[in-house]
Image 1 (cartoon, rainbow, N blue to C red):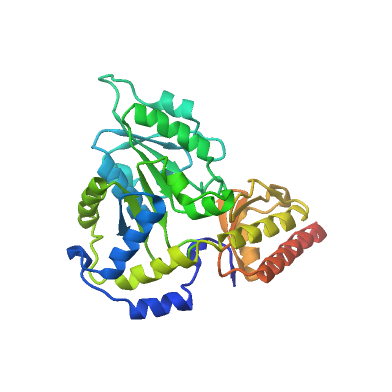
Image 2: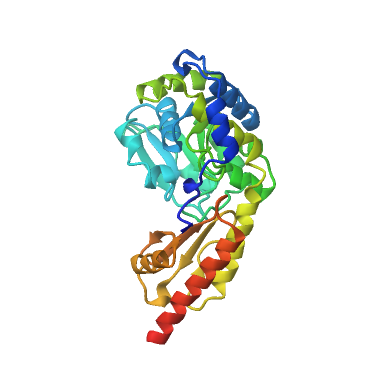
Length: 346
């Protein structure tokens, strides 16, 4: 199968598997796992933050950040299609007791003036605005890179209002690769940041959150409360170290494969590309084919290709380490054949 569903399906490299086997480990709840300590130090340095914390997933990292920053009954501003709102099971409400305040962005990027308007006034009828969450790259916007200037403008407004900013940077290294900036540049315009190791970076599991030493100290307790305290977790941190130090520079290859796929799909009748392909995600509208998303996905699967629906007539393709340029050629050929057969039958 050519698996274009997500970059989460990547398999750990041989180097990662060997590192897992050879990892020096200890009890991380006691702060004694050398591999985890080293990974956290590496991440904090790369992101320009004082400290970092290894967590089991990006969702857990985001939720720990919300729990640490906010108080029950307050409100969190976020983009209307953000991952925290769309795909984390209403956890900010279930766990932190906060409600989302949604702001529609441009290609996933909230505008500073809209954020300023969304910040609650000091009124007895209103919840307090306790946090602003950004996402870069933006998943629902097709892996769009949120411009650094937008982040800077929002951070300036939030700082003036004493409201912290959290960045869901699950694919932040993709943003860096696509913009030729550093992750430290992006992280400088947020108080805390979450990065994922198990997407384009290829590690089997894990994410990190980074921020001030005081924030991470409080976040560590929330991680424990959520059952995220690990024992000999170095077997998971060791491949994460390789992800951070050896896999970030190759992400532009995934972007090139995505552009190759998008360019080929543009040449197939009845298909249209919905997003500007900034990174490794391609959104394809199939409305003119006569297929529903479910029907189209089933036909793709029969041709040995996996993708996901992103709407009634939108398909998402995501390139990653395990997809080759030859796989892209095969996928394009198969998709062209599916469309051609539809035309012949009608």
